[in-house]
Amino acid sequence: MSNGQDSKNRSVLYVSATLALLFVAFSIFLPTQMSKAANAVLAFLTTNFGWLYLLSVFIFTLTVYSIAFSRFGKIKLGKDDERPEFSNFQWFTMLFGGGMGIGLVFWSVAEPMIHYVSPPVGQGGTIEAMLLAMRLVFNDFGIHVWIIYTVCGLALGYFQYRKDLPCLISSAFYPLLGDRIYGPIGKAIDILAVFATIFGVSTSLGLGSSQIANGLQYIWGIESSPGLTAVIIAAMTAIFTLATVSGLHKAMQAVADAKVWLSIAFMVFLFLFGGTVFIMNIFTHTLGDYLQNFIGQSLWMGNVEWAEAWPVFYRAWYIAWAGFVGQFIARVSRGRTIREFILAVTLLPAGFSFVFLAIFGGAAFNLDALSNGAIQAAVNTDYTTALFATLQQLPFYAITAPLAIVLIVASFVGAANSATYVLGMLTSGGDMNPSKKLRSFWGIAQGAVTIMLILVGGTAAIKTLQTASIAAAFPFMLIMLVMCYSIYKALSEEPL
Image (cartoon, helix red, strand yellow):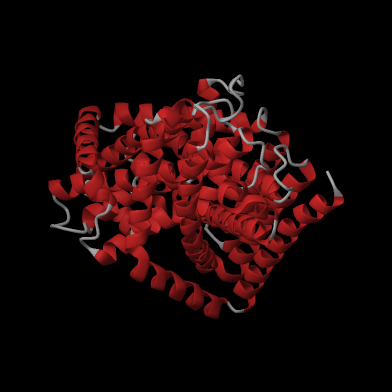
């Protein structure tokens, strides 16, 4: 590789790292001002463009499925004779592990209860409110999540593995920009993706560590404090950094497998002891309700304030993650056909999430009724303890509560692994196997950023970080709309 290319590689690394450090410095020394600025930007975007977030994801949906069922579906993400690098099960665990982090566990009980008490329409605390709550949770963690990731993953996988372009977000725009992807425009796209990834992972690290700290207090009475949270962050950072340095075929694969198997174990346990018939009834009804209302729910703005706080917020959050998740799922999907890629990525992890949410949410509703509102009360007091409050109503709590903490750690580490690996790719000119030194740098940097913010500003600083990353999703959403056109234009020129 030429020195000129090396310089370009370093430019993305240096600029993105500098921007991140400046933001953290301002957040530490001017926390109130930064919080106000970030909240003002996010409020402006969601209030005036909330409709665009929902409409854009619907456009993504139409785009990917029209491609999947068109003549382009048989094209491979790679050369015609390439075979997949991973087995089907390994592929699924890495798709799910890289694309769904701690949010599924964090909100699996808390969000259904929140919507049950305060639904966007109708009376709270009723059977209707409970069924609506489950459909809303399906909408937030279902197919739309994976549609967003698929757009990026499809474009990146196609241009990188079939057209031999660098493993960079900017490569997806080659049909429109040509060699200008190697210039300032392409670098700006890559820097934006790095910026959103750093803060997206740091936010999840902060929220996940807070849930663990509160869980330790809930289970064993260990006082939750910024110092304890910082220790937890340091421990999780060490785990995911070491796993990322080991590579895709070693600890990263092991973490992904462990996350899925532990999730399955909890699902079986809750299914058997949390009210099997009740769970099956609520799953069946919610799945049918979700599928029947898919289009309407995708674009629903009937309660604007509620929509901005939940579906719009989630769409923006997933778009902020789309750059690194898309790059990661493209990396592990080389050799798959476009049809296979789209259908597997959008349906398999979403289907697993539906079963997971129905079991956790259904068990929580059933146990809440049997305990005269104990889980609902816990959520109202501190929603980070919702999972532990649910497990407390079941046998073997002394075993399942610590295992729940392990699940939280595994869920975060799985997503952080992929993010750190992709950060190395994006800041090394698209190297598919970035150096261990660079992977270590990004792992440690994400943990250090989060620890500094927690110690100085507490969870409020993490909220500011989250707000900023979601605000950064707006320009990336526009980039993804252009990406849809770019991939369609390139496929139209493919000889078939």
